[in-house]
Amino acid sequence: MKSKRQLMIMELIKNHDISTQEELVDRLLENGIEVTQATISRDIKKLGLVKIPDGYGGYKYSLPVERKQTDVYNWLRRMFRDFVVGMDYSENIIVVNTLPGTADGVGSAIDNLEWEEIIGTVAGDDTVIIVVKPKEETESIFHKLEEFWS
Image (cartoon, rainbow, N blue to C red; front, top):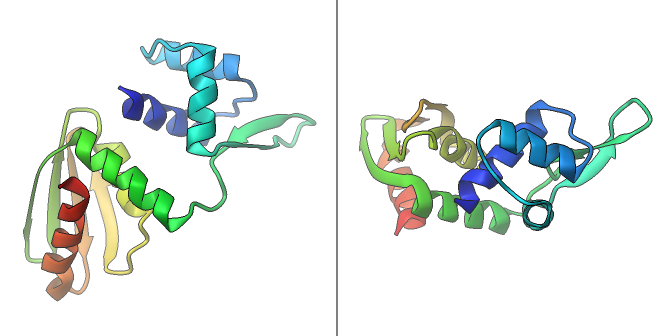
């Protein structure tokens, strides 16, 4: 599950100071994901990770400061195709059902769209709730999200 592994890499990079590929391999193993250093190297390139100063004279991996909009759309399309199992909406709420354990990543991908009509997402284990404002835009946003799924 490449997408799940890459989601875990992004979460680890966001939450921990990781300075080497070997350290990243070890963290992934701690989280039940077996991976080789060569695979990590490809993932780092694919995710566009960069090394930044860690404040202690060394360097650590970081997510790219800015993602191109096409990258965000491709990322979301991949997430939707791999993990989304259903969607529905009512009033100003869109509910996205995902495979267990993947809602957080899907929610993060939706947040990265930075669509002004989406005022927030809440992710559980297998469900993402999207709050839309104004509510008249809910159906339009729903159909835009559906395009990533088809």
